[in-house]
Length: 539
Image (cartoon, rainbow, N blue to C red; front, side, top):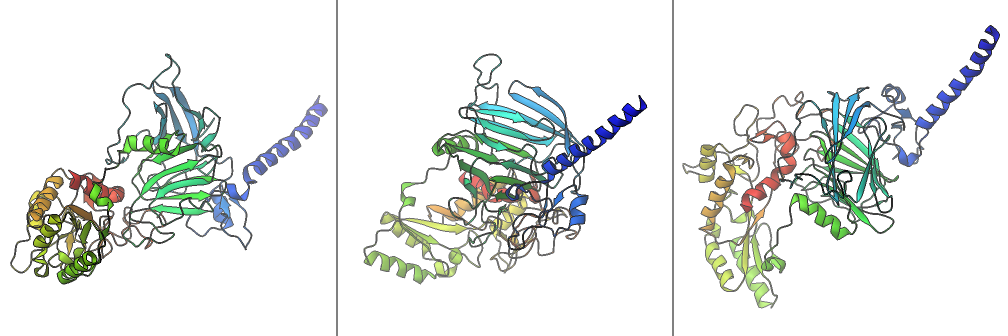
């Protein structure tokens, strides 16, 4: 009996070792295009990589875009607690099993699958215990009530969801042809910490459009390309973050059908495309709030997308014509442009004025050199033409020369300027000679303040449209004239992970991330500033 037991031992031990080796080979032997970076934006080494439970394979020196340190295929740091059906889909809970290297890993996660319409599916991943920031704008037309059912138990939808057997991950499948549109199961190293959230997914095609605002080809480059989303005032150039942030893409499938994916998150983020094809989201705040649109035509996808974020504004007919604008013009230059263009018989519809018309570059003012601008605009109107003036959000921060600058006085009276960490109006610098304060367009009184200033100036110059500029918001200094609070230690100014933004830190040429709005901190609201200014202007 003892000998038999020993024989079994002798047999089982190598067998278990073989299983272990096969498991390790399966987990760590990954094609290059399926390697997801385990140590992004940092120099990695084998010791650090192994300490993070990741795989290490030095790449060919002639091609270094593949990550040397990458997640094994069986990487998993959350265990499934339970999954249950709801009236609108599914809810699942997960428990953190292995903390990532990022601070404040979220212990309990909740994943909700919500079938909102036959063509629209929503999946959220959130802290199950603590309330986290969610964008207050745009006002999403959220689904209310029960989805359309064919009967009491079957939800009508173009899409099917498959959750991972264990750990946070899901697949979105088109029901008609079983195409997997988005598959985050067991790949990419899912992480959910307070200021770093990461999710990767396999995609069905490399023909991806969107992820604005960047200077790119129409079809996005998916060869290890990073698209950073953090609004920044800069001339559009390749490989930098631009004026706006739109975490939405449209993908053309091999069948010719298309679908769309929108991440409703306003925090700074990197979105990485790699040749698998695959996508990785790295977000530094908020939650994961995905909307999936089934299409199948590209026009259907856009219709489904704008159904929730709002339809585009219908521009006036005259705005579609020929326009002229130039920075650095005097009023005499303006007249010469008008005369030259008209005498040449060139049909045109609209003349624009850049910041030159302002007195000392202050909003809602008219310089002495442009005192005749109101008559010029009246003449444009008599000839069936139109006029647009530029308008920056920044307001001169101090009174000067014994005069009262009404926008500053009104803004201080209404207490509608963005605050620094001490509770005082944050002071930056743009074109104004002295300094600049910034309206907080999330404040309940801000829209009326802004409306009053626009109407007062319109009583002087009968402009037909406004050019809203510098609303990233732009700043000629980093953060505040007096510096941001505890810059080197403040986790708002210097989070553990900083996306690939111009300047290398979040308050580069914008305001402090610790600045306070009525709706929250600038760290969360930065990418929404131009939007909320537009909403106030429209109202």
